[in-house]
Image 1: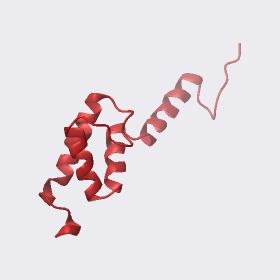
Image 2 (image 1 turned 180 degrees about the horizontal axis):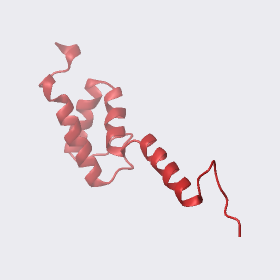
Image 3 (image 1 turned 180 degrees about the vertical axis):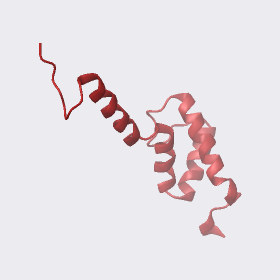
Image 4 (image 1 turned 90 degrees about the vertical axis):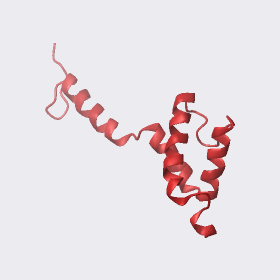
Length: 91
C-alpha cells in the first residue's frame, strides 16, 4: 500500500505541521473577544464590564463559557485600569 505524501511529509508529520500552523493563526477566544470589545471604544468597554458584572449578555461574546466570560471581564478591567473612572475622550 502506498501512503500519500504531501510536499515531502508523511501523513502524521504533515498533520502535525499543519496543526501547528493553524494553531498559530487561530487566536485565543478570550483574547479575540477582548480585542473585539476594545475596538468598540472606551464607553462600550465600560458598558460591557458593567453588563458582565451584572451577569447580562454582551454582544459578540455570547458563545463563550461562563469561565471564559469571567476571564474576559478580568482582562477588560485590567485594560481599563490606567484610565480610572473616565474614558480618555472625557478628560
